[in-house]
Length: 286
Image (tube, rainbow, N blue to C red; front, side, top):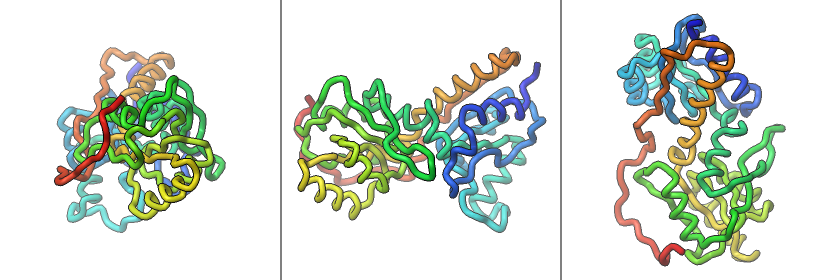
């Protein structure tokens, strides 16, 4: 039985229900014909022009991304804009685009459970709740480690990005309880503190919220420490697992998987290219 896009959409909806996305989000099918056949699925964090070209060159029928292409309203898809050029490239290349954003963040397994595993957690639970939907994860490491050791282990588990990992806290600080949110998460720093976390792992931490969080922590035992793991890196880990589960779901539904193929993008879509002048006062990891 040939796999059609509608078959893949049914499986994806079961894994990442669009109804669990935040109200502001734009998830689901962006381009594509539900009746078109799907043999090769490409997956990436961001639907950039380079990623779309990579998918087209690979012969992909479907591109699955974490971040939406059309999150905010646009009034033209002319190729004079990046958004327009992206839509045109997808349509001309006959590549369907499907997005799982905040609905993939909250899924179990999903973006944040994959990050929890990278943090060294074998068990975790939701960190907090917004709009009736759980957000982030929190759990305890099997054995406490120093903040430096924790950051080094996390860096080894994440794909390398130009910005690396930024850490706020003493290198020899004790880390036993870990809270995290893949992507931009400075809005949940208070939730991490309330959960008793020793460290909060997220990305896109801004100067003032991060500084104020560390000032508040200094008045109350010094935790949570902060780890900015990078937006792209922290949200890339779920892709391979998602594709594996998708293939299994289609096989369980009775589809012929002989011609089925999946690939994870090799492109780092972190917007930064290189870093100059970074310095550190950490000690040796223990």
